[in-house]
Image (cartoon, rainbow over all chains, first blue to last red):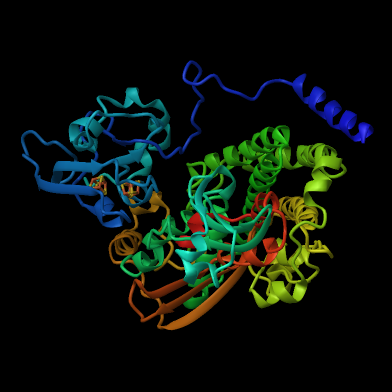
Length: 159
Length: 407
Ligand code: SF4
Ligand code: SF4
């Protein structure tokens, strides 16, 4: 009996000398891998125009129907997107979202993308319906990890 | 655990059968760490021994099967992860194989190998959670920490390959969601190379440990006949000595090309279940290694533009691809009318998907045969006549996932 206990203790001692696996969250944060499915972002083209053309494909692809899009005609003199239309309303209910990534797969222009952010909180359930202003990035420099994934050349531009 | 007072048999005669004197009804769960989820076990005790046991399920009912009927085949897929959340890839696999059978579609060999590799990693991962929690139930804290450390390594690989840790939705009808990342195979190899040594550590802590042996040997055994009669499958059945593994009996996804053994027990007690699962992890490691070494070259997705979305780059210059892309994501694809039953060997046993199609883009009916469901209802058979303390050991050895039982 004693020998097994000593054997077991030996394993424990051996392991206690190895390096730690624990991460001191939230002081230390882990780097999320490329292609992580976190909070959504709406991306821009290099010239600052919105990518989303309001085609509603993301909303059709969503298994839980948590995306609402309304589209409008672009003003030719001052376009919002590169297509004929743009999304005048774009809302995602982040409480309902299951982060499956189907919207990203469906979007033909790489406009809606699941980013690296995994911590977000609000003090009211209603505030979790993220609108276009919450989702749209200011510039592509803000999201370097997404910029690399959705390079310009590869994608449909509708122009 | 909360007592409900004595002589409650009089109050709930239909649950516990004829009235006996001086028995006590004890509620184990629904909030109890050893029930591994939201499960309530009604125990009827006579002193320390168990005379009756009735598992009460339904606390986690989510209506997944019904919900699938109103979604297209693609949209129904993420829900399969959420049934057995410890083995998401296995659940995806069963579902996509069933739909592929209905579509009469063959996926490329590389895809099959990748699926086998990930399904076996899932098996290791799921068994690690089982081993950790089971050992913890029986008082061995350290094993739990080690098991979760190794599980974390697998989960990290899953996270990188699919985008999230647990709800992977990685296998898709006709292929996988995306090409694995560049260092995927190296990561898998690094993990698999180091794994056998870790297994030796767990075994050193448990296999010959006299305390562990006393809590598991000849405890809550179930005979082969009884197990078969109750529809028990998976490691539980094999621990009773029945050689039944779907991977051998009805090979799917190219399992016939792999060389592995089916570990069997003899006594069917808690210790045998432990041994079978430990041996199974080693076999899963062996299969995963073979899949990794023999990973063929070639395409990953099936050549069926009506079902598999085209690569995004193609949309920019190929009108036809764009049309298919739009159709797949709006309407879905039509699946020929018919019905299919596809079984796979999930870490918990025989996982079956019965799908009826009426030719529309959504399934007419989906029925899941969840292994945990049948296995859990062997629990009364196991614990009756035994000691009260052994219920925890038995429940841990069944390895249930309540999400899958209630669906
Ligand atoms: S991640 Fe999935 S659930 Fe969330 S918005 Fe996109 S498609 Fe809908
Ligand atoms: S985000 Fe993409 S899919 Fe959704 S409406 Fe905009 S362009 Fe279409």
